Image (cartoon, rainbow, N blue to C red; front, top):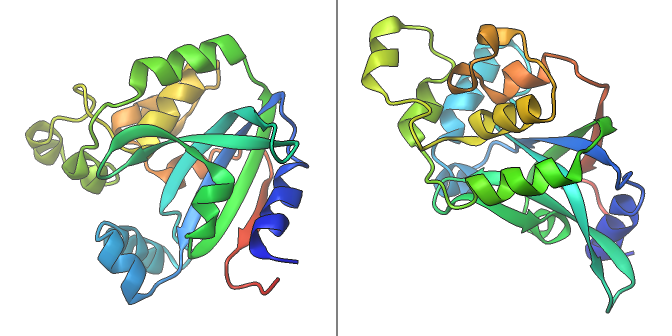
Length: 202
């Protein structure tokens, strides 16, 4: 079985009526660090805490039907460092992904609210400084970097989506500008399951 068919088979098992929170942990190698230098920060924090780093977070709230293949393709909404907030096809995204992907499946999604959310946030620029210092609780740095002022990062975006879908986050008083992907994952909103590992051979 080739990689694409493997991904298609796995994605067809996802419940299309529910929210899926997606956590990505990139493998530590030169290619990944070259493509996304911010990974060094999350990897160092993970190493200091003695556990695998959660490098990126996004969500699936809707699926598009592919008539040519007769399948439903999950769409992730995420923050991209170069293009800002955007929608991507999960199957296509995973073809070039080098790491592990975990999923938490929550309750039913309010599809209208989810679509409105994506329309409102699509295209907002990525704020690298805010992302870098989100997990650092130093007051004067909080004042220097303009967190949440029309620009954002992955966990900022995901926290705002969860709040819109009526999920409460306790960490950092639920402030999206202070949350990291690890903070949201540690809320244990649902069991975390390994969905894909690029090191597996198909």
